[in-house]
Image (cartoon, rainbow, N blue to C red; front, top):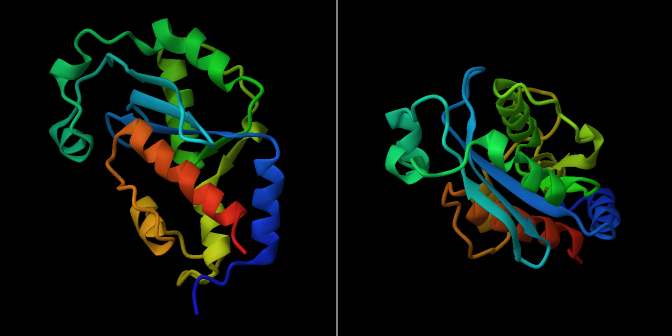
Length: 189
């Protein structure tokens, strides 16, 4: 019977909730070591958008990535570069706990984009947490690979919890879904 709703996971989410975290999502040109962030969205626990921007990448947006998030070259043509927008983003994130669905990927992509512009990474990685892993432990289904819990796609997790928000593959929408999923876990009874 799933979810198992592991009480330790619910308690951990409640502890994080007390720090008023923010939630972030990125859209990228792809998944490789050469790809960069082209959209970011940051929301608070209550669904308020704290930061949202497209970024003009220094590389083209491949058609297969465009097919997922529907961000076109025309949409980013007049957008700021990551470098030009970083100070404003950093001010929103600095000192906050930051939840991400698949934090390993989003954090890697953000750092990779920083490096492309020769910028140092000033944020403390320990302040980022992964809602995907938290949900996997909450759900409680063991992985077929024999280690840890089975990971779930964001949309499947939302549907499982009865959250009516779609996984649109746009940054603010997916950050909102991540925040709602986190609140569901933290408020589970």
